Length: 140
Image (cartoon, rainbow, N blue to C red; front, side, top):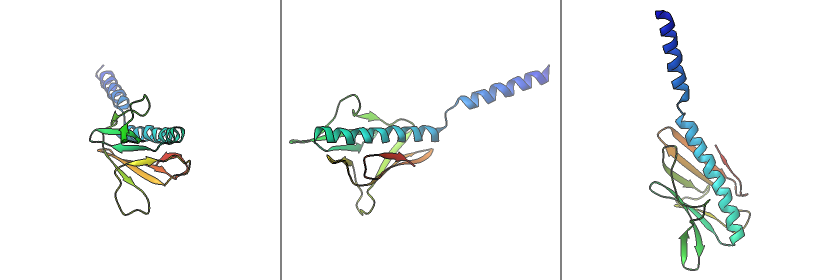
């Protein structure tokens, strides 16, 4: 009887361990979601014929659209401001070949753009979104 209880206890503990999410998987999923939003922002910039910029904020990120009065925050369903998910604590933007640190990613009105790398950081590690300049982004 005691052996059966021990085995049952082990099975319950293993089941509860498998139900918890992996923080690295969550981070990668957040990066993939952001990569898809980048593709959407690039397409939207072409349709609007106005540049759109992505900018990380203290607790998330936002997309801004260029207007005659400067940059204004988008508030539509897809490109609205959002808080970070998956425990993301920040993001770094790197344009390969540039020595200066960028504070935003700008999506131009042309289908060909500048290659960029955006790295998301969390306690679980980091995930990098790579844009090659052809409008598509992938997570590495």
